Image 1 (cartoon, rainbow, N blue to C red):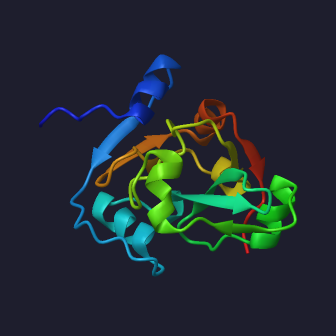
Image 2 (cartoon, rainbow, N blue to C red):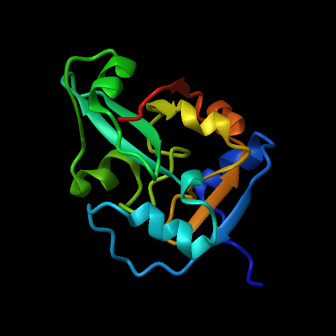
Length: 163
């Protein structure tokens, strides 16, 4: 098996001595905004879709960027996201803004290793699972790790985000 290329997310986990498994999968480069992309990732990896967590970057009315991790099975509840971030308005950033804001492309956005440290919120459903899968920071690679370890690595707040 070919050696996995180390991403910033992997380096962060290794520096923190957090155990993880990197899994590569075929990525066709198509990342439409349509529902189901994370579910297709789960299928390619052969894992339960409930364990695949998508990274959503949002902007508040004060222009603060916040990161939210939500199960691929659910939509994020904007009211709950606003409450978590303590703001009056919040919306996902545009896909074309993602690279400049985070250093990551759509379909390869990891909550670890962004250009700047952003406040991060992880849906509480993650803590019900033994392991979750998140983007490794490139298209076609996911990281599997304990959710508690991800909370630690991201210095994240655990909140209810489900619609």
